[in-house]
Image: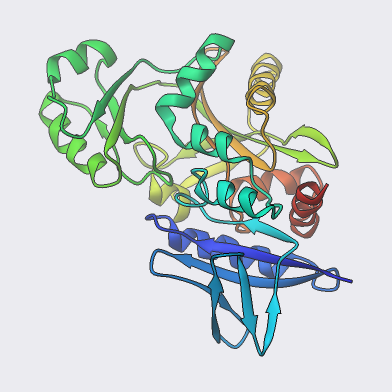
Length: 324
């Protein structure tokens, strides 16, 4: 009997459109001879199963089931394609754990930790993982521009602490631009991280559990046409993504080691994509994504292709690992 798989997509954040695209790619490429697939759209005001004719059926949140054409359907596994809250910050991971439904992303603790940039960097620092100098603000805190600049220097990045896809991020060159950048970041989150600018080669490293083992995928070098790897660079083609990255052997060994270390130390499962910038031969961690983009143009699928893993197998393996 085929397993019933719910592919969840959408979410509550600014990333919902990207998530819908990822979820539909998963739906397209998964083998329908092996799985019964159900697209579940999750938004703040409604959770819906959407069939191939765009008919909508509500989801029962009590047990995450649906009633479609007179039949109650419970799911064997959930494929998580939600970027941002509630799919990448631990909320849905905890919900599915309570319901004892396997799901393809990491656990609720790992999701909550990695989604919080400030907490993640603090937890990883004792393991020797380097990061940029940083300054933290919460909404309502007094803003001392001189103290911030003294700590992180200029230029710097002002970021929403819990956000993705470069929403709420500004590169600041002068003191006069700092307050406006903080306002922009607060539109995405009530916590902010301000980081010093690191000038160097930016890379993205995909890691996953593949056939039971931790696997580091070929590394991607990010060459943005813009001032940094912003939304347009990520999703509108205004960058080069070079896989495998043009790194020295020493650089490749170091960043592979640290990406795998992060995955294993945090007891991750599912997909992850860690972003680093090289200062000389040393990789500095920027962030970790636990539900990275899964479209045909996204970085992690590109890396899997270079490793010889087609999308169908990449997605099928995620389900197999969740059910393992």
